[in-house]
Image (tube, rainbow, N blue to C red):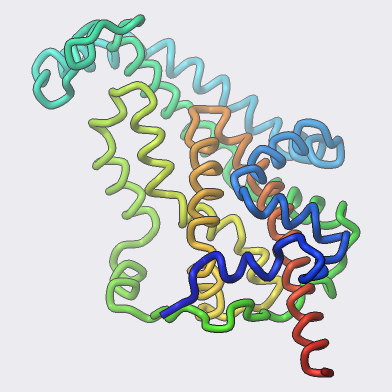
Amino acid sequence: MSLNPEAQDSLFAVDPANKVPQSLIRATSRLQFPPSYAIVGVYRLFTDKLLYVPAWQKCKHGVQRGAIVGLVWTFLTFGVQKKFIEYFLANSPRVTGLSNDTMFGYKIPFNVHTYAAVLLIGSQITNILRFFLSRNIRIARERAWEQTVASRGKGPDFWLPYIEEWKVPPRVVVDTWTGRFEKQWMGGITMLIIKRVLLVPFNFYPGVGILLAAWFKALATSHGLHKQYFAAKKMTDKEIAVFMEERKWDYRAFGFAAALLEGLPIVGLIFTISNRVGAAMWAHDLEKRQHFVAASRSQERKL
């Protein structure tokens, strides 16, 4: 059995007995609420010229082309899609619980058909923009991570080999038949399609579809956002699994906030970049804690 999650936090409690260095006090405070890093990422991206200028220069042409195609698509198909949604809702009220202006019998302040059509069009425009940005936005994300790390004044030697922080780490099984089946037969695109199909009925409820999708994608999102962190520390699959299991609620909370931002139509693409910034800031604080543990263990061995 693994230790209670509070066990690892007790190592870093800010009190004289643990002698946490002054440089780690603010990081320890931030680590108590991982979703805050998603907000920090948004703030830094929009206020730091070294981040938003290179990102915009890399993506602006794709945004312009995608916006033109998206506007044309909206003009040509919005009416048709709204009519289809009206037909669907009219013929399946028991499934959706919706009518033209009510939700489960309660009056709502907007037309549900219009809301659903706007949400659907927004998702389609997002995919159009993603198609035109594809490679460039990936480069922008990688550069945002690198620039954020560089802004902290840390070089490659800052990332230590993995240090186990728990005295009794949790047991994890990395090579499972379900994992092998998913990798071999249920690739990322297939799983994405399945999840989207399953969530379609919930998209008609204002906000519900986005919240559910963010919850389901939370761990995968946070894992993806920290791939560069794990690579910098040269962690094995087993070490990554243990590290995330020890902080599973931190990773789920941060991943939920990040996936929620990324799930917003159109503007969510911007947050895919800001989330890299926030993830880099979180990785920086996690690594400072790894340094603290390494120094503490070294001192214990000398005593």
